[in-house]
Each structure stands twice: as C-alpha cells, then as structure tokens.
Length: 278
Image 1 (spheres, helix red, strand yellow):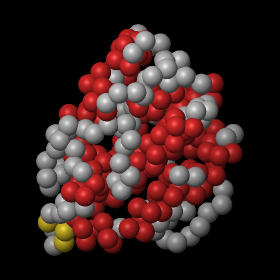
Image 2 (spheres, rainbow, N blue to C red; image 1 turned 60 degrees about the vertical axis):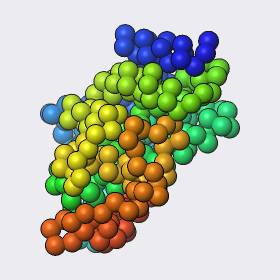
Image 3 (cartoon, rainbow, N blue to C red; image 1 turned 120 degrees about the vertical axis):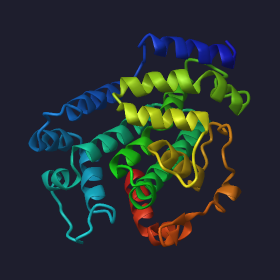
Image 4 (cartoon, helix red, strand yellow; image 1 turned 30 degrees about the vertical axis):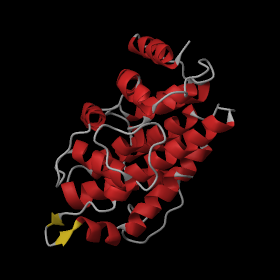
C-alpha cells in the first residue's frame, strides 16, 4: 500500500470512529472525560492525578513554574497544585500526556526521532501560545496552551500507525497536508473531546490564514507555531513562515512590541517548555 492509500485508509477508519489507541492512552482519555465534566470537583481531580505518578509530578512542576507561581511560593502536594492550576490547565496536562503516549510504543529509531522532534515543536508552540495569548491577543491563556499542545495530535496518531503501514513516511510533506492532516486530525481531536474553539483554531492553522497583529485564538496559535524555534518535522503549512523569516515578525503592542514582550517573557516560556518536556 502506498503512502496516499495509507492516509486514505487511516482517515476512513478515523471518520468512522475506529481509532486504535494504546491501552495507556485509553486510560488517559478516560481521565480526560472525567476532567471535562463540569461537575468534576477539585478533590476528585487531585485523586485521579495522584494515581499517575508521572502526571502528578508534572502537575506539581507546572504549578511551581514561573507562569503559574507569581507569588514565588512553592507547593509540594498534588491537591494544592490542582487548586492553583484549575481543572482546565489539568486538561492541558492530560492532553500532553496523551500526545506523548501516542509515540511511546514506537521502536523504529527514525520514528522515535521524528516523534521526539514533533513534541519539541508542540511544547514550544504551546508555551509561546500561552504567553502571546496573555500579553498580546488577550484570549484565554489556558485555552491557548491547550491548543498548542494538541495542534499536531493528528500527526502523532498517524506516526503511531506507521508500524501497520510500511512506507507511510515516504514521499513529500505535501502528501500529509493534502491527504491526511485534516481528516485524521479532526477525528483524533473529536476522540479527545477537544473543545470547539480549539478545534476552530487548529482548523485555522491548517488553512494558514491569520491576521497581523493577531486577534483570535487561531491567530495566536499560528503565530506561536511560526515562532517556535523547532519546526514541525511533518510538513510545511501553506503560507507558513520560514524559521528565518519568523524571527523578523514584529509589530506594535500597546507601548511596546512583540519582540520586547517575548524578551520579557523568555523565562516564562522556557519554564513552561521545560515542564512540558518532563
């Protein structure tokens, strides 16, 4: 089966809801289902987070990061971390865990390297999106963080299927953009119960349309994606800015500029990125 046929097969299965997730991903999806319940209590969330040692460590670490610990008071308990972060940020952390679990079963060295680079890109994008949302576009920062984490989830799922489809990674990047990214990505976003505003932002990224200065969540995600120092290894988006050109993007924001804001926020971005890479 050639690459395009493989994309069509995976996309067709995905459109029918036939997504094959590893067992550890299924468990994390069940956790996500609990967290998206509007009646989910802090104590319930804390108990569920504590059941996963890795997720518990990440939750405490992000609660103590520069982005969320403005008072400088460190905490050590999961319950205190959950109270500080709130359920929506926990949803982002669980989404990050799911995305990374999708690549955890891979044994091929090339696939492992590609997956690792893709996560570096997603983590950079998420950290930048959170800061750009808070300082520039004034959309919800937690939603922007979540959007950055999941914006390449379709690619992660596709990579997790590579063992079943030899030659899936052969060919040109445009093959993935034109035949796999949208149908597979949309199905995986639905399976992960990603909120509609985030889905629309990811769809804006697929289309490659944005305004400068940025205004919407989609604009925020696109700008963060362009500015991420590690580019996605999967494709070049239509109209995407090259890494060299991205460094020249600047515009006025109030009394300052984007470059000045990002320079001021460098520690914050690096702290968020480091937690997501744990």
